[in-house]
Each structure stands twice: as C-alpha cells, then as structure tokens.
Amino acid sequence: MIQRWPLLAILLVVPVLGQQVVDLDQQAAADAAAPPLVAAAKRGDLPTVTSLLAKGENVNQRDGNGQTALMVASSGGHVELVQTLLAKGADVNAKTTKTIIRSMSLGANFSGSAEIDSAGSAALMFASKHGHTPVVEALLAKGADVNSKDEGGYTALIMASLDQLAVVKLLLAKGADVNAVAKNGTTALTLASKNASPDSASIRAVLIKAGAR
Image (tube, rainbow, N blue to C red; front, top):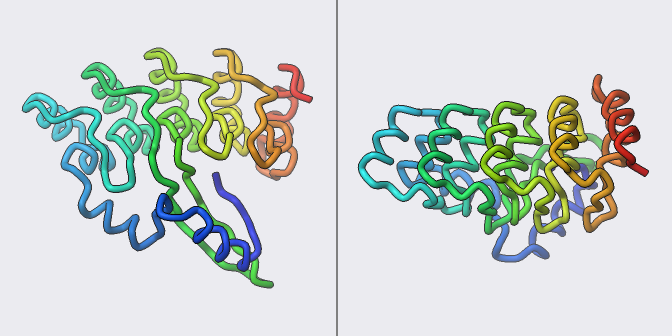
C-alpha cells in the first residue's frame, strides 16, 4: 500500500517494525543479490526463466526480501511468465516474510509518503494493487486465496480499491469479502472514499452494490 504519514511517523514506524523491515538500501542490495530465477522474473525475461526451470531451478526460491519469482512477476504484470511459473508448481499463496519500504518521498510541512509492502503479501496482492487484471485472473484460476491478508490485515480487494476498478470487479466476482477490515480499520470502501482517482466514484458504486457498508 502507499501510505502517507507525517515525517515523524515515518521515522518512528521503521524501528518499531524491527528486523523484519527492509529499508531502501537493503532493498537495493537484495535486488542485486537476487537468485537468478527471481532476478529474471523481475526483468520479465521469459526465455531465461524457462531455461532456468528446465535446468531444475527451484521455482519457489526467494530473494533476500523474501519474495519469490511469482511475486515479482505478478507485480510487474508479466502474465506469460506468471503462467509459466504456475505451470511449474510455483506456490500461488506463498507470502513475503519481510516488510519492504520500496520508496519514500517528503513534501512540505514534513509530510511524506512511503510505498510499503507489508510482510505476508502474496502474489495476488501485488498484481491487484498494480492493476494487472490478466495476472489476477491467472492467479485466481490456480487457486489464489482471494481473501488472504497481509500482516496489516489488507486484502487484495482493499489494495485494488485505491484505483483499480477492473480488478475490484474481478475480485468481487470471485468471492472477495467486500467488508474485510484491515488492522487499522481500513476497508475497501473507506479507501476508495478517501481517494480522488478518476475511477473512485465508480469503485465506490461497485463496492456499495456488492454490499459494502
């Protein structure tokens, strides 16, 4: 999720999360040291992924951030690559083991924003929040848990409700809990109501029609 906090809150939350947090420098280091399969999947390099799998590479290997090839391919929207990994036995419901701070920016009045992937995130969540509908379809077809939650209690539907109308519709059609509540009280409807994206009104309407309250 992209979350906005005062600068002080951003500085305080990272130590509280402890050793399971990967900061920006560690993220870069982990990317550089990623196993070949994960690195190729992140690049969207299907020929290399196919070759590595044919040589017996572990399809569920993780990088230093606890991410699998399926997760990074899903995040990047590489649907053919995702389908290849799933066909080779990738764990569709595997979850990250660390909280990753991917980017942070500071604005006026010590305000800031940080893009954070919480520990416990699955491939479906990565694909959903980035609006990769074909990837979401592929993951669901292989048994992705539509109501899985990360450690913050966010579901794929809550994440998609920020600005991904097509994904919201798909997840609801596949049984997503429209009233799931994150640990901080956020629901899909409250998130959609706070956002000002072009699709916000449509997302709210779809959620309400599905029973959001």
